[in-house]
Image 1: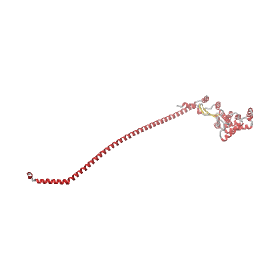
Image 2: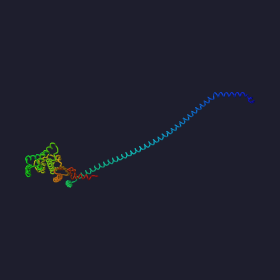
Image 3: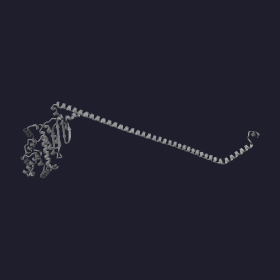
Image 4: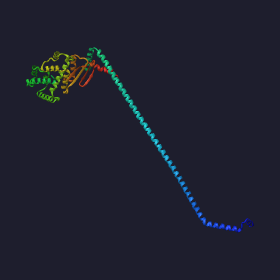
Length: 165
Length: 224
């Protein structure tokens, strides 16, 4: 005690200080503790609610993201399927078109070949007829100028005999 | 003179004879022949009058008049029309035999002489026929005869083409062959066609027989 007294600190002062402090603490506790607790509780609730909301939003986003991913996958599948169907259709059409073109080409080739053959036949026939005419003309010319009249007269008589048979 | 005039002369001769001999159908065969000879009747009138009786004669005349007026074919039962056709064919064939293609180049006097040689009979009918030949080309005469005779069912037309003209004897043989084959109502027409070169071509009763050299050469020169 003497030490404290040497330092200028009396026991009474300390008690007073403790009482003051206790009083101050009691008053402050009485006046400020509840509002502060309420405020902090409210604040905690708010933060908790916001955190929950954020969590919910996060979950919702995650869910939506999942849905979107699924939808995207589904769409991709559909697209792939449609693309495959389209490819198949195009391939089929291409084959049909090629087949038609091939048939048409064959038909045109056959027609062209037929026309060429006919034209050739006609040309050959015309040449043959012309040749026959020329040959006949030459032979008739030669015979009509060279055969004696008696022979021709005889041929008429022979023809009549042949006819009568 | 045309073919119608000639037919009128044929009918005139027959009817004149009948008017002079109204009892002809009551005469016996011998007396009929005597009457024919006295009247110098043509072969046509003789054959026709021997072939018909009075009722057939009346029918023929009525039918022929009717057909000539209305320009239609005479009835198939018309004996007169058939006799006229036969007679005309016979004369045309006789002319075709006796008159070769040089006939057209002769003078009128020479033609008369040639006709006299071919048709020796000189009654009114034959005189008219000779005039008919003199006044018409043989082609046009044949064409007219064909037009008249073609009304008959039995009519057959024969065209004979040869490279050079043949003798009258050969032509007679040809005519005889066809008249034997197809009957008296056959009209044979001869044509000289130098383009045949040799042989002959016969178009008989719608059928062609080509025995010409031209045909033979064409056949030979055919490639196919």
